[in-house]
Length: 381
Image (tube, rainbow, N blue to C red; front, side, top):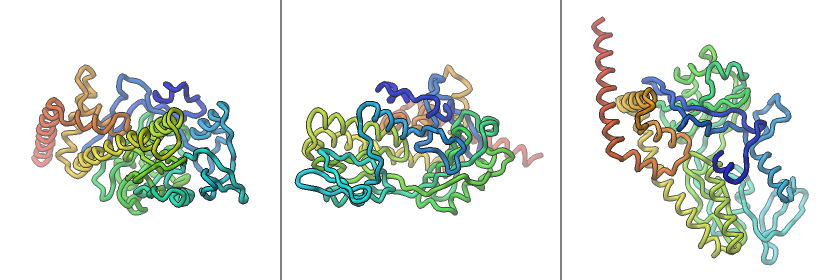
């Protein structure tokens, strides 16, 4: 939201479904609330499209629709027609759309994600482009109503670090009358989703501890490896079909890459050599950060697998949140991992500082000593 505001784009209330004030981290050893840095409402819950299937709010304005209308108000000509093929005519890219209609353009920017059939045709038009590496994810919506959501989830996004095979990350995000569940992992399938929804940590987040029926769901793919060359003569790939941050901040990374592409076009040109000189460096920087991200997620995977480590992380975070005057080593790192609001390199550097390591070591000892003492007391009783 801060990046958009710096460009003069302030999201209206009809687009923002709910402001997120905090993150709730859930593990089998306990839960902890992580407040937004400086107590600011920095996260907005939005629907990209018109909302879940069967949504009662027919007048909902989705995030993408709002930006599209904003572009139109600035002079863009919106052609509401399905593009079916990308080819070439003479020296210009040509789009086929609708009932066999064709149109040539000086530049084509593809922002089709990785779930569109159009992307394969884009590959044919630019032989140097390779399809991104992907993983299957799971997204679903639950209809609870605002009163039930406020009572059970509040104005917080709920994060689950659970020791389930193939699970990387799961989150519940309140949005108006609905709650969105996002599941990231390796080869996400119905069995993994069922195991997650059966976990007591997840069930406790719903009214009465019961998982409601799904309003809608899908298994979309996610970009986890960038294409070799997300640009060509008069063509550039933006968002998930191009270079995107690993697992997090898809909207933010699309914004950064679109800005880099627009700057290249405006000040240098639309040839492949122009993109190679002025767009590719931004791509390489994000790819490098994604390599470091794999180290960060190796650490979160270790937290998921090792209960002693989970106890230390929980105690360290809870202590920081209880004492606002303390330097929030773990809290700030977890916040930036969950939101993707800081480069992974910055997260990794902060995680290796002596103060962070010393505090984590102390809390590992103290947290596990308390757990052992509690177990001994229960056995004695």
